Image (cartoon, rainbow, N blue to C red):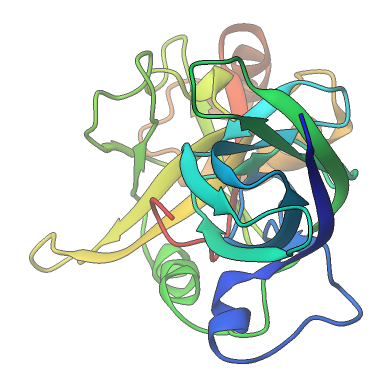
Length: 271
């Protein structure tokens, strides 16, 4: 296919909209402090040259291992001919990253006549394990303050094996800005959390149960043999009300429960 990518620029969508370039961080996106999970929306500005006509373009994000972690919508583009350069700008929403290692953004094209998509180009995309500079306040900050005073967090696990679109209450422990939740066994059951890569955390008012904050969080299970598990047991013990086996609960948790670490991020829910 006679289509060639001549230039591409990727940066945080809100920064671009506000006229702030990322010269030192161009070709990079923000993943929040967890360094994985749902990405902040980002802008892709790209230029093509090629045989005149209309085409279908799809952008795909590949993990470091080559797996597809996000596929964008089909977009119809018109090129004016090989002596012209045509530039297009779109925002990507809902993309996810699996780690802070470089991913690849792949550009696929078809000629709009039912042919399969062909790869035109691919470029490396850096994943920044940080919140963008504008995320210094907002729901994640409100959530953090609320969880310091509360005993219950509401957790929604997306997907067919999750909580069915409804958050469920859970007791938790805090270590820094991370939330730790036990699920399974004779403890609370949060469908899909043990296997989830992300969840949605909600804080509610003690007075009227109204929603105070709703925040995306990256999720990962902590192995029972991980030293972190042992470190967290003393944090979790006093948080568990009506504990029937006292300090021996730590051994029970290792045998029958899954401990999940939830790292809140400032990524807008559903972005």
